[in-house]
Length: 344
Ligand SMILES: *[C@@H]1O[C@H](CO)[C@@H](O)[C@H](O)[C@H]1NC(C)=O
Ligand SMILES: *[C@@H]1O[C@H](CO)[C@@H](O)[C@H](O)[C@H]1NC(C)=O
Ligand SMILES: *[C@@H]1O[C@H](CO)[C@@H](O)[C@H](O)[C@H]1NC(C)=O
Ligand SMILES: *[C@@H]1O[C@H](CO)[C@@H](O)[C@H](O)[C@H]1NC(C)=O
Ligand SMILES: *[C@@H]1O[C@H](CO)[C@@H](O)[C@H](O)[C@H]1NC(C)=O
Image (cartoon, rainbow, N blue to C red; front, side, top):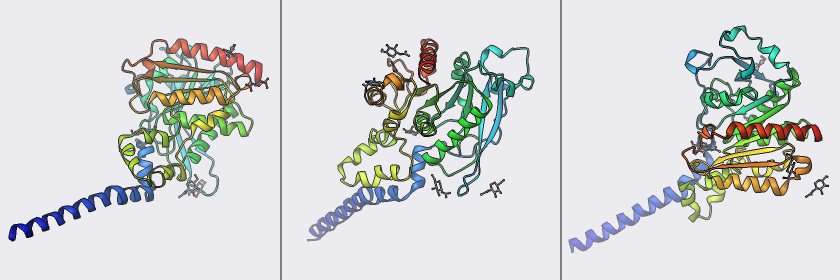
């Protein structure tokens, strides 16, 4: 008798528990995710925080000929005031061991159009101080501006959306253009590739051209990246995954749909990706490449070059260690200049 009763109670408790777990996992969690823009943003912009107030150049960074500076983004009236932190990294050819950082004429270099400019946009987990090794390779070719997005590093601003971040970069692009006649290249890594691609499509509307676009470890869209995540994959068993987990990313303005913006890129493109990238599968770079090849007209929009590096430990963050990178950049610049002389 008693043991029968226990058995029934046990079964009921188990059933209730299973029901509650199922309810939490399949109903409550997706609904919380859907309703919390904060949780969504912490996934897409994990390093968004007000960081150290001043990234002054110190010996810690082991790089010289660099100016730390801040640019205000004009306030469009309805949102917050934003000040972006950036580094101006002089081209190697004018950097000398004998000079101190404050002895360079940084503004003068900016107006010397012989130096090609590179706008460098980093990934979603870093700030501008984290890519010294890459800057050292790229400054052999470029005069670099490395920017921190709003909310990143010591840039101010908290309203992180694709629209706002692309608009911020548009302001920086124009800030450079107002001071320099140099040709401007844009280089985006990971999230930065999404911002860069959208930026160039946006500039096109104003008939402004970059000379070349480099996409380092790019993705097709944030929703596509999420779909590769095991947890999000697991949720494919519920029919409301699209509505509760995927659509909010788009509705809340953080999808960075490069696969569609790349069609409006009217300059040569170079895509770099490693086969062992653990954050963004290289298949996405392949897909982006195919889209760029098939949906653009290379005759007047420029060629697309794709370098897929074999799985040798470069992953998502160490593409600068590719021994051929310098040569690939050199050839790309040459191609961009030829294209620009002919078309722009
Ligand atoms: C955040 O920026 C968006 C534009 O992307 C704007 O529509 C919205 O009003 C802003 N929100 C706040 C709280 O300022
Ligand atoms: C933005 O800056 C302007 C000019 O400095 C100032 O008048 C305004 O109050 C600031 N707005 C906010 C929201 O801080
Ligand atoms: C941003 O960072 C997160 C966490 O590190 C990563 O999983 C995600 O794929 C990144 N997203 C994008 C679009 O780069
Ligand atoms: C690309 O554009 C050129 C010049 O406008 C045109 O002659 C050519 O047919 C186009 N190619 C394709 C594949 O559409
Ligand atoms: C673009 O690619 C075509 C076909 O491979 C090639 O003939 C052409 O020279 C390339 N254009 C530039 C500017 O490199």
